[in-house]
Image (cartoon, rainbow, N blue to C red; front, top):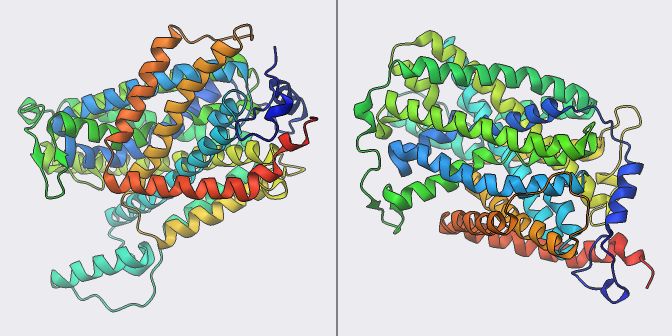
Amino acid sequence: METQVKPSDTTSVWRKKPLAAYEADMKKSELKRVLTRWGLTSLGIGAVIGGGVFVLTGIAANEWAGPALALSFMMAGIACAFAALCYAEFASILPVEGSAYAYSYGTVGELFAWLIGWNLILEYMMGATTVAVSWSGYFEKFLHLFNVHPPVWLMNDPVTAQEKAEAMRAAGQAVPDFSFAINLPAFLIVWVVTYILVKGIKEAASTNNIIVMVKVATVIFVIVAGAFYVDVANWTPFIPDPVVDKTGQTHFGFDGIVTAAGIVFFAYIGFDAVSTQAGEAINPKKDVPFAIIASLIICTILYILVSLVLTGMVRYDALDLKAPVAQAFADQGLTWAVYLITIAAIAGLTSVMLVMMLGQTRIFLGMAKDGLLPRNLFASIHPTFKTPWKSTIFVGAIVSTVAALTPIDKVSQLCSSGTLFAFAMICGAVWLLRVREPNLERPYRTPALPVIATLGILANLYLMWNLRHDTKLTFLVWGILGLIVYFLYSRKNSNLNDLPD
C-alpha cells in the first residue's frame, strides 16, 4: 500500500511523500550497491567506536559519574536500543539514503522531516568537526612520543593557542607572541577523508574496514591487558556523593550519571549512519536492520567493559581529560602500550570522521532529491566515482575550516541534542506508520512496538532535558534557523508542489 497525499494536503507543511516516490528513487539511484551485511556493520562500528572511548570517557567519569560511568554507558545504550529497533523497521520498509529524515517524510510530514534532517546536519557535520579537533590532539600526543614538539600556533585554533601560550608563560616557559594560529592537522585530516569519500564508497568502506579491525583489536587489548592492573578500591564509592556547583548543576549521584549519559551519547551517534547507506547496500531490507542492531550491541558491550577497566586502573578524579585511556596505561609504566593506544586512537577517530561525513552527504542527497535543498550542489553524482562529489567537497570545506579556526569544547553535547531529538521522533514516527499503514510489507518488525516506541521517546527526551542549559538554548536557536530556511526556500522548492491537485 502507498501513503497517498490528498489534494488538500499539497500546500500543507504536514504533506507527506508518497511511498511510491521512494520506490522510484531506489530504481533511479546512481549509487553503487556494494555494501554487504558485515560491511554495513563495520561502518556502524567505525562510526561508534572513536571519540567516546578515547576522549569522552575521561570527562564523563572525572566530572560527572565517577566509576558509575558504566551505568551511564548502559543508560545511553538502552536509549539508543529503543531507537535502533525502530530504525530497523523503517530501514526494512524504506531502504533509501536519508535515514530518519526520509522515514519521517513518508509518515509524519514535510516540516517534521525537515526538522529532523536539519538536526542530523548538526549531528554529523559538527560531530565530524569535534572529532577532527580530537584527532589533532592525539596526533600531537603521538608526535610528543618521539620528542617532536610543533609550535603552538600550528596545532591549535587562535583562541586555544592563546590560552596555551599564556599557560606556558605562566609556567616560566619562553613562548613568542604570534598573530596567527591554525589547527593544521585538523584541517588536513578532513581533506584526506574528503578525498577518500569523493573517490568512492567501495574505497571508503575498504579503508574503514581496515581501521575498524585495528581499533576493535586495540579496545579488546585495553580491556584484557587493563584488567590485570585494576584496583577494585578505585571503584569505591561506585556512585560518588552528589555535588552541586556554582551554576546549580549536580555532579555525581544519580543526576551526574544521567548527565554523563547525555555526554557519552555522542559516542553512540554512529549507529544510525548505517541507515544512511541503504542506497549502497546489496540487500538493504535485511542487511541494514541487522547491521544497525549488531553494531549497537557490539559497541555497547565494549564501552561498558572499557569504562569499568579505566576507572579501575585510575581513580576517577585522577583521570586525564584529553587522552584518558593512553594516560591510564602511562601511569602504570606501560609506555609501549601508550604508543599502541595513541596510534589506534588516531586511526579510530579517522574512521569516525569518515562515516560521519559520509552520512552527512547522504542526508543532503536525500533532502536535495526532494527539492528541499539545491539539487545542483547536493544531488550531483560524479559520472565516474558515482558519489555526491560536490556535496562531499562542500562538507569538507565547512568541517575543515571550523575545525582549524574554532575552539570546540561543548559541541559533543550539541551534537547529542540533535541526535536525541531525531531518535525520539523516529520512535513516534514508526509507531504512527504501523497504525496508518498496517498492511505494508515489513521484512523486520519491531517487537512490542507500542512499548518500545514509548520508552524510546521518553528515554531520549529525558536525556535531552538533562543536558546543560546553554546546550538546550543553542539547540533552540539552531531549530529556529532551520524553520527560517524551510519557509524561505525549502517549502517553495519542494517536489510535492508539483503533485496534481
